[in-house]
Amino acid sequence: MTESASPYISTPRITVLGVQPGNPPFRIVRIDGEVVGEATSTTDVLFAAAAAGITVHDLDDPSVVRWVGGGKFTWRLH
Image (tube, rainbow, N blue to C red; front, side, top):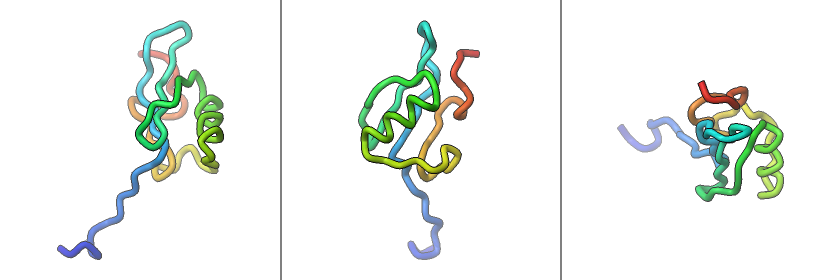
């Protein structure tokens, strides 16, 4: 298989890690591989992205945001 025949796999700039215990529970946000803060909602993720100069049009686009341990609606421990 040549490189041109292999599928393109993008690495999203934003990664939101799994829910961590706390009051309230939170998720760690990484941008370009560096931890930039904690988020307790999707709004916090959007604020972090904006602070880094990233405009997010679709939180469901895996080429933009990688959700680890649950999607954009997962904000509590199970």
